[in-house]
Length: 166
Image (cartoon, rainbow, N blue to C red):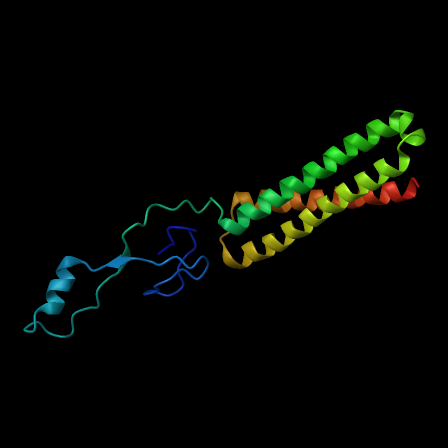
Protein backbone atom coordinates (compact mmCIF):
# COMPACT_ATOMS: atom_id res chain seq x y z
CA UNK A 1 0.00 0.00 0.00
CA UNK A 2 0.99 3.60 -0.49
CA UNK A 3 0.45 6.79 1.48
CA UNK A 4 -2.21 9.00 -0.08
CA UNK A 5 -0.43 12.23 0.88
CA UNK A 6 3.24 11.64 -0.04
CA UNK A 7 3.03 8.48 -2.15
CA UNK A 8 5.63 6.50 -0.21
CA UNK A 9 5.24 2.75 0.14
CA UNK A 10 4.15 1.65 3.60
CA UNK A 11 6.67 -0.63 5.25
CA UNK A 12 4.40 -2.58 7.62
CA UNK A 13 1.20 -4.33 6.51
CA UNK A 14 -1.07 -2.95 9.26
CA UNK A 15 0.69 0.38 9.58
CA UNK A 16 -1.44 3.12 11.08
CA UNK A 17 0.68 6.18 10.17
CA UNK A 18 2.97 6.92 7.21
CA UNK A 19 6.65 6.68 8.18
CA UNK A 20 7.56 9.62 5.91
CA UNK A 21 4.91 12.31 6.42
CA UNK A 22 2.97 11.00 9.46
CA UNK A 23 -0.44 10.96 7.76
CA UNK A 24 -2.93 8.57 9.37
CA UNK A 25 -3.79 5.65 7.10
CA UNK A 26 -7.53 4.96 7.24
CA UNK A 27 -8.61 1.39 6.61
CA UNK A 28 -11.80 -0.60 6.48
CA UNK A 29 -12.81 -4.23 6.83
CA UNK A 30 -14.23 -6.20 3.96
CA UNK A 31 -17.90 -6.81 4.85
CA UNK A 32 -17.82 -10.58 4.25
CA UNK A 33 -14.77 -11.01 6.45
CA UNK A 34 -16.24 -8.79 9.14
CA UNK A 35 -19.44 -10.86 9.19
CA UNK A 36 -17.52 -14.12 9.56
CA UNK A 37 -15.51 -12.66 12.42
CA UNK A 38 -18.68 -11.77 14.36
CA UNK A 39 -20.36 -15.17 13.94
CA UNK A 40 -19.35 -17.31 16.97
CA UNK A 41 -20.32 -20.54 15.15
CA UNK A 42 -17.69 -20.03 12.45
CA UNK A 43 -14.30 -21.60 12.92
CA UNK A 44 -11.53 -19.42 14.27
CA UNK A 45 -9.19 -20.48 11.47
CA UNK A 46 -10.61 -17.83 9.16
CA UNK A 47 -7.94 -15.67 7.55
CA UNK A 48 -7.38 -12.27 9.13
CA UNK A 49 -9.23 -9.35 7.56
CA UNK A 50 -7.59 -7.48 4.70
CA UNK A 51 -7.11 -3.76 5.25
CA UNK A 52 -7.15 -1.19 2.51
CA UNK A 53 -6.80 2.55 2.38
CA UNK A 54 -10.19 4.04 1.56
CA UNK A 55 -8.61 7.06 -0.10
CA UNK A 56 -6.02 5.08 -2.05
CA UNK A 57 -5.86 6.00 -5.71
CA UNK A 58 -3.52 5.01 -8.48
CA UNK A 59 -0.13 6.43 -7.59
CA UNK A 60 2.23 7.25 -10.39
CA UNK A 61 5.68 6.10 -9.32
CA UNK A 62 7.24 8.57 -11.74
CA UNK A 63 6.08 11.56 -9.71
CA UNK A 64 8.44 12.45 -6.92
CA UNK A 65 7.77 12.86 -3.25
CA UNK A 66 8.36 15.99 -1.19
CA UNK A 67 12.15 15.62 -1.01
CA UNK A 68 12.40 15.11 -4.77
CA UNK A 69 10.43 18.29 -5.36
CA UNK A 70 12.60 20.23 -2.91
CA UNK A 71 15.68 18.88 -4.64
CA UNK A 72 14.40 20.10 -8.00
CA UNK A 73 13.40 23.51 -6.64
CA UNK A 74 16.73 24.19 -4.94
CA UNK A 75 18.60 23.00 -8.05
CA UNK A 76 16.64 25.38 -10.27
CA UNK A 77 17.21 28.34 -7.94
CA UNK A 78 20.94 27.59 -7.64
CA UNK A 79 21.38 27.46 -11.41
CA UNK A 80 19.27 30.59 -12.00
CA UNK A 81 21.35 32.56 -9.47
CA UNK A 82 24.53 31.47 -11.29
CA UNK A 83 23.16 32.46 -14.70
CA UNK A 84 21.86 35.85 -13.55
CA UNK A 85 25.05 36.74 -11.66
CA UNK A 86 27.13 35.70 -14.68
CA UNK A 87 25.05 37.88 -17.00
CA UNK A 88 25.22 40.90 -14.70
CA UNK A 89 28.94 40.49 -14.05
CA UNK A 90 29.88 39.97 -17.67
CA UNK A 91 27.80 42.91 -18.89
CA UNK A 92 29.36 45.19 -16.28
CA UNK A 93 32.87 44.00 -17.12
CA UNK A 94 32.30 44.66 -20.80
CA UNK A 95 31.01 48.10 -19.91
CA UNK A 96 33.93 50.27 -18.75
CA UNK A 97 31.88 51.82 -15.94
CA UNK A 98 32.40 48.67 -13.88
CA UNK A 99 36.05 49.44 -13.24
CA UNK A 100 35.63 53.14 -12.54
CA UNK A 101 32.38 53.72 -10.70
CA UNK A 102 31.12 50.81 -8.63
CA UNK A 103 33.86 48.23 -8.57
CA UNK A 104 33.61 47.38 -4.87
CA UNK A 105 29.83 47.42 -4.60
CA UNK A 106 29.27 45.27 -7.67
CA UNK A 107 32.00 42.80 -6.67
CA UNK A 108 30.53 42.37 -3.17
CA UNK A 109 26.96 42.07 -4.47
CA UNK A 110 27.82 39.48 -7.10
CA UNK A 111 29.94 37.48 -4.66
CA UNK A 112 27.11 37.42 -2.12
CA UNK A 113 24.65 36.31 -4.81
CA UNK A 114 26.99 33.52 -5.91
CA UNK A 115 27.48 32.37 -2.31
CA UNK A 116 23.69 32.27 -1.90
CA UNK A 117 23.47 30.22 -5.10
CA UNK A 118 26.12 27.88 -3.71
CA UNK A 119 24.11 27.48 -0.50
CA UNK A 120 21.02 26.58 -2.53
CA UNK A 121 23.12 23.98 -4.34
CA UNK A 122 24.28 22.47 -1.04
CA UNK A 123 20.69 22.33 0.24
CA UNK A 124 19.82 20.64 -3.05
CA UNK A 125 22.40 17.93 -2.34
CA UNK A 126 21.00 17.42 1.18
CA UNK A 127 17.46 17.07 -0.21
CA UNK A 128 18.76 14.65 -2.82
CA UNK A 129 20.40 12.39 -0.25
CA UNK A 130 17.22 12.41 1.86
CA UNK A 131 15.07 11.64 -1.21
CA UNK A 132 17.30 8.75 -2.27
CA UNK A 133 16.94 7.12 1.14
CA UNK A 134 13.18 7.68 1.55
CA UNK A 135 11.54 7.82 -1.89
CA UNK A 136 11.48 5.90 -5.11
CA UNK A 137 13.69 7.26 -7.85
CA UNK A 138 11.81 9.56 -10.20
CA UNK A 139 12.48 11.83 -13.15
CA UNK A 140 11.97 14.85 -10.87
CA UNK A 141 14.73 13.59 -8.57
CA UNK A 142 17.10 12.96 -11.49
CA UNK A 143 16.50 16.44 -12.92
CA UNK A 144 16.99 18.03 -9.49
CA UNK A 145 20.24 16.12 -9.07
CA UNK A 146 21.64 17.36 -12.37
CA UNK A 147 20.52 20.96 -11.84
CA UNK A 148 21.98 21.01 -8.33
CA UNK A 149 25.36 19.77 -9.52
CA UNK A 150 25.36 22.36 -12.32
CA UNK A 151 24.37 25.12 -9.88
CA UNK A 152 27.16 24.24 -7.44
CA UNK A 153 29.70 23.97 -10.25
CA UNK A 154 28.82 27.25 -11.94
CA UNK A 155 28.54 29.24 -8.72
CA UNK A 156 31.89 27.88 -7.48
CA UNK A 157 33.54 28.64 -10.81
CA UNK A 158 32.16 32.19 -10.86
CA UNK A 159 33.36 32.80 -7.30
CA UNK A 160 36.86 31.63 -8.25
CA UNK A 161 36.88 33.78 -11.38
CA UNK A 162 35.79 36.84 -9.44
CA UNK A 163 38.54 36.25 -6.86
CA UNK A 164 41.17 36.14 -9.61
CA UNK A 165 39.89 39.41 -11.07
CA UNK A 166 40.66 41.40 -7.92
